[in-house]
Length: 417
Image (tube, rainbow, N blue to C red; front, side, top):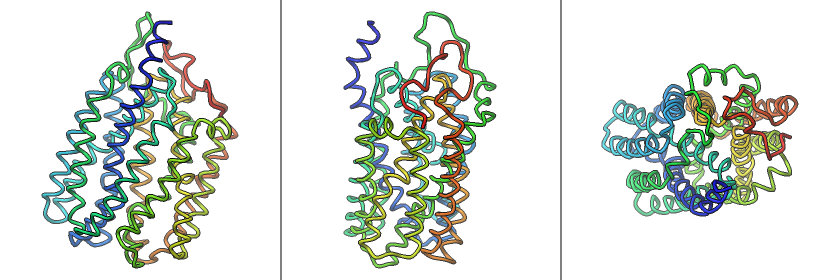
C-alpha cells in the first residue's frame, strides 16, 4: 500500500523528468536525422560515402547495443550507464566536427555509434519501468520528444537557411549537452533491476537473454517491426537532399519534417485510447499499410502540397509501429530482460536492417532518384504481412519464461489484437 502511494506521488515528477529526457534526446535527433546528410554533403562527400557514414553506426549497433543493454540488466546500473553514454556521445560529436576527410569521419561516426545507439533503448527501458511501476502513459511522456523534434527540425532548417550547413554541428553539440543534463535527472530507483520482493533473486544470465533469440514470436515481431521501420531508410538518408534537389528551401524542408512529427504527437497524445481500441498487432498492421501507401506516392515525386499530406502518414508508418513495439516489449518480455530485449530490438531493427537498407539506398538513390521509394514500399508490405502473422499467433502473454520474481508480469492491460 505504501509502495503504491509512493509511486502515485512521484508519478508527475517522474513524468516530467522522463519528458525532459525525451525532449533532449529528440533535440539531437531533430538536428541529426534531417540535416547531418546536408552537413556531410557540405563537407564534399559523395552520396555513396554519405550512405556508408550513415549506415556504419547502424552496424556497430548490432554488436554494442545488445552487449551494453545486457550489462545494464545484469549490473542493475542503467542510470550510470546512461550518463556515461550521454557524455560519450557529446565527445564523439566534437570529434566528428573536428574530423578531416572520409576516413576520419568514419572513425568518429563509429565511436559516436558505440555511445549513441544504446541511449535510445535504455531510455525506452526506463519508460517501460515507469509504465510498470508508476502507471505512466507512455504516449504522453514520449510526445515531448516529438515536440522537441519539431522545434529542432524547424529551427535548424531556418538556421541553416541563414548561416549555411556549417551550423549543423554546433546545434548538435548544444542539444547533446541537454541530453547529458537529462541523464542526471533519471531517478535511481527506476533504473535499478533489483527486485522489490522480499525473496532473493538470481542474477540474469546470458542464457536467459539468449532465450529471446530463440522465441519464435519475438523473432516474428522483429521481422514485422524491422521491415516497416527499415522502409524509412531512404527518407532518413536522402529525404532532405532529394527535397533540396526539387528546389525546396531549408525552411520548407524543416516544415515537411515537422508535419510528420506533429501528426505523431497527435497519435502519442491519445495513445492510451488508440491502444485500447486497436491493440498491439492490429496497430502494427495498420502501420505497415500506411507505410506502403506513403512510399508508393513519394516514388512519383508528388507536388509540395501532396508531399505535405503524405508526411501526415508518418504518425502511422513510424509512430504507430513504435507505439506497438513498445507495448509488445512491455507485455511480452519479463522485467528482468527489459533492457536486453530493447537492445536486441535496436540491434536488429535500427542496426542490422536499417543499416543494410541505408547502404543499399546509396546506389538506389543514385540510379533511381525518388523512384527508389518504390523499393521501400515493398519492404513495408513484407512488414505488414509479418504483423498479420504475429496477430494470429500472439495473444498477449510472455514470449519467454520469466524468472520467479517476474512471473505474472506483462500482458496485463493492453489487448493483443
